[in-house]
Length: 425
Ligand code: PGA
Ligand code: ZN
Image 1 (cartoon, helix red, strand yellow):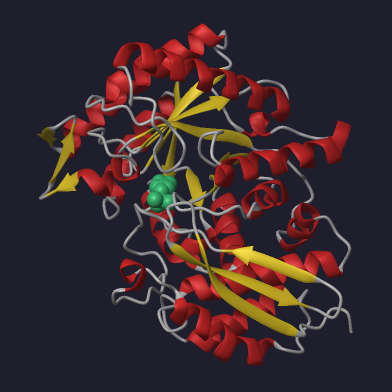
Image 2 (cartoon, rainbow, N blue to C red; image 1 turned 180 degrees about the horizontal axis):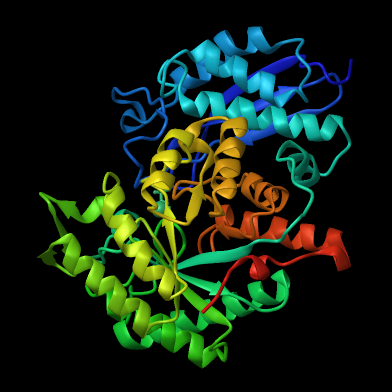
């Protein structure tokens, strides 16, 4: 009785960019699960469809249609169902939508319901959320993920000329807590270095909370990170990662890299030089989202340097795209974003397919986020060992890092840090 869905109520709220997004409450007789849906800016073309209203209100970005789909079409179908039966709930949502990319009901509508059900299910089962999710993932090993913290923002996330979208620091101390501290200290030192070098305004932050100085050279950003890591005293303990999000600087067959048009072969060579020169441990979306071959060529080089090649826009958390990438040997790590695919079950399936093929998995936020801290519990439950959640300075980003602090506290001595999952240089 306590497990039956008694009511579902959705509404339009705001995300971290000030755009409308979907919030869903799923009720059982005594419990409630609430989820808010994130939204990307550098989205992959193969992602599930985020339903927006169009028209004048909110610059066309309203989500009232998605909200209405939940309240009028989804809610009546789910009422009375056992909230713990995630797979059958997600199956029903997929069938109700009946399109290949969730364009009828909207992936934002479907995901909000899927996640809110999982939260209500955890409450109703009196389980901690990460443990509940671990069971859904059929995973026994809870792992606190290594944060991939985006501290310099470029590309679609910042108003500057940096072509590469994200420059991340990756702290590898013994525990999550100690790693978080090291990353935060480095972040503040980076701020003072940028201020000294580039003056006022240069330490304003981008969408994911990283600084967005008006640099136009990739190497300038990497040099800043190296300097900050060194000054903070964490050389060897903090590595560097990048998300190129290269579809967004790919124009007419060439890449507009550091303001020069270059071929993909030149770009491969450039990445190779960067891997040799800097303590880089992963590169995400190094090429545009259809070029499985270029990814594969770079992976061959990257493996020798023990650098991960991560698929995001390439693979869009979708088993069909992941299968193509596996066949082409395009990457060895999956970036996992639940809203790219639209249900919790499909996201778990994507992670399992990746793991089965001996890829690593990195759970990720979106550039448009909310205070919802689902990804923190999901990363621990999945046991994947890595999370991408932005810089440690905006509420929608720190909510994830803070939830991980609470989980580490709860796990106490049993807390395992994801460092062991990364194979390092
Ligand atoms: P997005 O950026 O949320 O704007 O897509 C994050 C990423 O590309 O990884
Ligand atoms: Zn990305």
